[in-house]
Image (cartoon, rainbow, N blue to C red; front, side, top):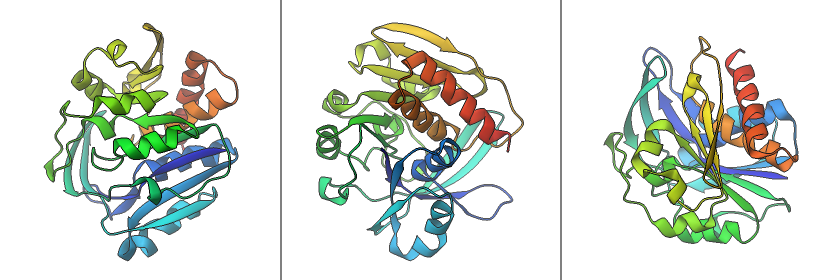
Length: 253
């Protein structure tokens, strides 16, 4: 059983109606394609539940909703693979008790949208029961509204509880030498230019191919597909290649 945990967001793109986003949604798109036993734990403001939760539920993976008081909201635009974001509103912080009891399983992917969402004590509690995969947005995205700001002012103790860390290329630049982080498996994604898998200080490149599609959520789908493949017995590089293929199939829809 794979667990996927994170806030839903409201995403605002030029010329489009507001739409649901966040790692719990985009990761669930990968779970729909992979058809493995999983559970999604999602949160947003209670007043946004009727708008944001149904698209997630319709993907088919069982969902536990956690009532929240705030929905993270982003204005997003793209120039090719380059994304520009403005934080319009921050999401709730998850305390350890906010995460419901889940069926037994080996892996949990935690999908924060900013540094405030999953503090050390919550990740430590999850890591006592599962291997934790963590999106690097929860390390380097400052918890502030306005133009999205990345910095390295995060709690290094959190890294001790993470088995897999997924970083976008610009996030990896902020954290510095990924070999010094002490995380067993680090994935650095570079959009249409593929990804690098770091294990034991050694790197392996995994290629990808450009596709004419909106890449929003591709990193979330990659991270979830990776842990599904690791849970199925793939090695890190093989899991990354499998995840790349899943993302390509989603973008080609």
